[in-house]
Every structure is written in structure tokens, then in C-alpha cells.
Length: 410
Image 1 (cartoon, rainbow, N blue to C red):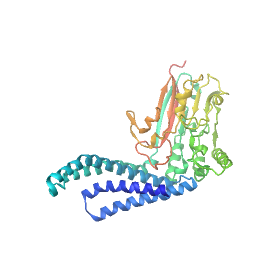
Image 2: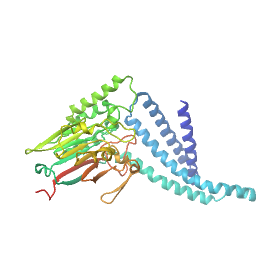
Image 3: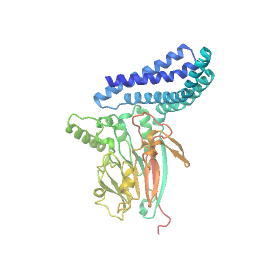
Image 4: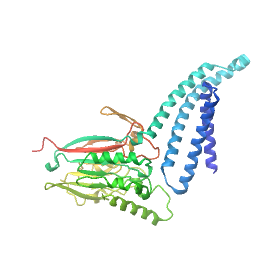
């Protein structure tokens, strides 16, 4: 309780400082009261949801919405405060000097400049505020189908034109609109790909999160089936369990749920996809992530039944695995499919020209197709969302990759 009181007092003081910009521009009572009503409601709801979350470890849509509104307000206030602070650094010493040299006549020092700074601060701060609110209202379900054609010298001819759809990071526990999610599922099926590959993070923490959405995910269809691997959130590592047996049961329940939905789980294992007497190897590893992330992936075990000369598609949730182990592995992996980063759900993208997100400072490969040593990596931006319940500039993604035989093939 003491912790929450301290947090509440801190943000109350923070909000009071930001309030000065509004008060400088208007003395209209209704606007001033509205500001504090919004602050109290956002802070109160966030506190309530956080306390509820600490009790049951369920990151539900209510908690996600509370966090999103809190972040939006906090970023807005932070930008305003930064402008006012730097203006005060200059203004206050000068105001003190004028007060002692000019008396009362020097009290209102540069009032016009203060008003001008407040206008700039509120105008600039309004841009990310509006963007974050839009991302919560519409961006999180603004599904985009991204299509790539990749050519290979060693692709079996029977697979020339073979298509695969990759989805990743569903995070079903965050969904709050069945109609929109159903639209996304229909969009996947409309691609009519030969195989559907899911690269991990079916839930936020608990298997029960996927149960309300199982009928929609079961409806996903592909000629050569659908396959799945695990992401870091699928292990239940980020919540407290009463017993280790409860955690193991949750993990088992999630595996069973995916199998009931028609996904074949590849847990450090492989499967051959066959067509017209030829085949390619599909390989899936458990989560392997750099830093503090779980490293259950065993690439050597996963390829133990695969030949070095086989054309290989690897499913590995975390893209950091690619440079850490995949590229330098004795076996070449023609395609690696990953997710995990979400593109941070925030950034700027101009297709074919420019893309940027703060996540690039954490992951070298964070969105789209990369090529090194004749091995491709695709990092899917994710189908769902986590924590912040929205997306700004980095939209939810459905990837469609078409395999083609290179012209060099004899």
C-alpha cells in the first residue's frame, strides 16, 4: 500500500506541473476540472487494475487498457513537463533577479513567452497522445498482409510456387474484440497458402487465455497443414504458481489446446512436407533467446532426423537465435521464421524505403526479411499485442512467402 501511495503522489505532482501549461493558456473552469477528472480516473483505474493483477497474475484486456491509457497520459505529461522545466531553468533565475532589482513590477517576467512555450508544449505533446489513443482504438487490429517471393538454387522443383503463411505472437489473452479477430483469421484463410506456420507466443501467460478463441484458430486451414512452436510467454514463466505441478499442467494444457486446434507442435523436432515425390524439411525449436530469455531450443536435436542437403525451413520464435546459432550451424537453413519483437508495436514504416522502431536498439533483426550467407530470416511483427493495447505505425502482420526455384537451377 505504501508503494502505491508513493507512486500516486509522484504522478500527482507530475500532473500538477504539466497542469501549469493548461492553466497558462486558459482559466476556463470546466477545462481545468476536466483535466483533473481525466488524471484521477486514469490513475485510479491503473492502480485498481494493477492491484488486481498482482493478486491473480492475469494480464487481461482490462489491465491492458488501463496500462495503455496510463502510458498515453504519462507520455503527454512528460513532454509538457520537459518543455516547462527547461523554460523554468532559464526564466526563474531571471525572474528572481528582476524581482530584487525591480520589485513587484518584475514579478510577471516574460508572461507572453511562458504562454508561447505552453502552446508549443501542448501542441507537440498532443501528437503522441493522439497517436497512442488511435493505436488503441484501431491500430491493434489493422491487419496487413505482407508478401515476399524468395528464390533458391536448391529448392525442389515440385515446390516451385509453394506458399507459406507465417503468423506469430497471437497473445490471445490480450484480445478484446471477437469481430476484429475473426476478420484477421478470415484474412489468413483468404491467402490460401499451402501451409500455415505459427512461430510462438499463443498466450500471455496462461493456457486458459486461448480457450475463448479456439474455434476461430481451429478454422485456419492449409493444404499441407499448420504447425506451431513455442514462444517465451508460452511457458508460464512470468506469473507465480502455487505449485510447480500447476505450472506443468498449464504448459501441458497449452500444448493440448494447440493440438486440438489442429496445430502440430514441433518441439525441437522436424517434419517433412512432401509434394509430387519431393520433400522439404520443416524444423521447429523451442524458445531460444539472447540475454535472460529461456534457452530451451536445441537445434542439433531438432535436425537429428534431417539431412544436410535437405531444403530447410526453421521455426524459431526469437530472432536473436539466428545470428547466435543458426547462421554458423554446419547445416544451412534456407529460411528461418521468427517473431517475438512485435516491432515494439510502435514505429515508422514507409514500405520499400524506410522503417524505424526503438526496438532496433535491442534487436538487430526486428521486422521483415534479412539475408546473410544465402540464408533468409523473416521477423514477423506479430498478429496480436501485449501490454500496450495498440499499435502505432507497426501494424499486426500476416506474412505470405512464395518459394521459387532460381533461374540457375538446371
